[in-house]
Amino acid sequence: MKEKIHHGRNVKRFREMMGIKQEVLAFELGEDWSQKKISLLEQKEEIEEELLSQVAEILKVPVEAIKNFNEEKAVNIISNSFTSHDNATGLIYNHNPTFNPIDKLIESLEENKRLYERLLESEREKVEIMKKMLDK
Image 1 (cartoon, rainbow, N blue to C red):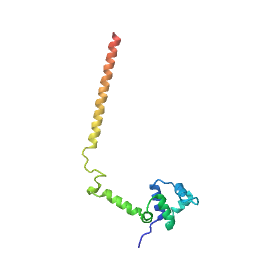
Image 2 (cartoon, one colour):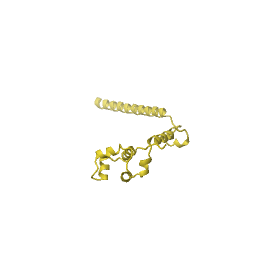
Image 3 (spheres, rainbow, N blue to C red):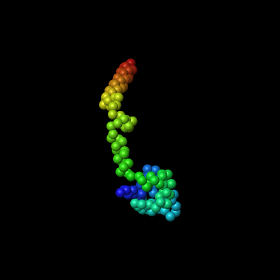
Image 4 (cartoon, one colour):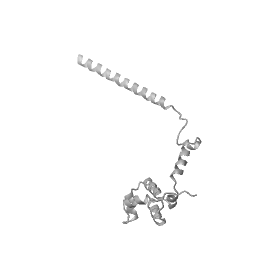
């Protein structure tokens, strides 16, 4: 049994991915359309072929993408891609960093400490110079 794909939800997903508001989609579809009508369209399980092709053209996606997109399957594919332990995900997550982040943090704290000590020493020298000038 072929599972039902919810056309309206897919229209909404693609519209949101493209950053298009319901009002804009309504405007592009024509004066018979409103934001409310787009909202109702996105709730429909099945959308007529002609309207679906108009929406797909506006969203710049193939009609088949709206008809066949299955979020659950896409999530599974993405999930499996990110949790696999092969080299395919090596570019996404480096399992073997070449440095210890804690060591880098400690190094930067030590460098800050050295800088503050130099600043403090410089201020002390200024104070000594000013004292000498006042004593003269």
